[in-house]
Image (tube, rainbow, N blue to C red; front, side):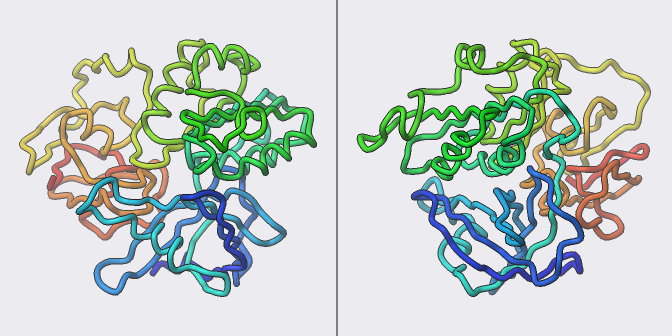
Length: 349
């Protein structure tokens, strides 16, 4: 275990919906710094057999010195596939009085507190957790803030009443909730505002303009749809910050996805087991993204340098890390999600 991990006492467990639960945690060792809204903790758990498991869970709020993380129970989509190891542990086995091991806070998906622009928060499903923390931070400031959240219905909607109460007390904050399939118990105007999905028409009506700062968080299809819609609304991509919940990817304008860089004499990257050899494209942010663009499928999870799922053996050449991962791998290996080649490179994948 890394010495960056510390012990947290579980102070309270609160069921937020049928599938989402909040855990209030008190660090036994004071954190090195205060968290910035949008950041997460990395949790580590050692199962009875196998390697340690690490997962990142966003901080959804603070209560005094206690940190709140709000976690969805990731159940298997079909028989024969195991439920999520870490989320199942939290939901079934972690109770008030227990301890958990975590490191952080950390993360790049953070609220820009220095900006004075309006803010638009867009979330889908449990992707609301980091933006709830942002909404709390923005409430009562001079920045106009619109928080639009979409989910299935009230059975799975977490922290909804908390956000409605927050908006009542702060004139700068507008909360708008959409349920795709409301239940008979869900009441429009009380539990949600609109039935259906987030549309361009809704955004045109609620968003204060393309010059706002936009923060997106949710599952892949939701994120891709929102990103493309914002670009169609002439929002500058530099104004869009995002974080995936679930399998992550990289959002790009559709036009950019259709364009390929011309050969430039750059390093040659060889994916030995895949039989693919191609020139490095400096427009790619990392080797994982580059591999995917060239049809090489690499296992991954976090895409943030913490889970080590994408760790790959380097058989020739070397890599560098524009941003340091949580832990660098041992010599001769690379975390493809956060590194770039130093020159010609051969990877055992």
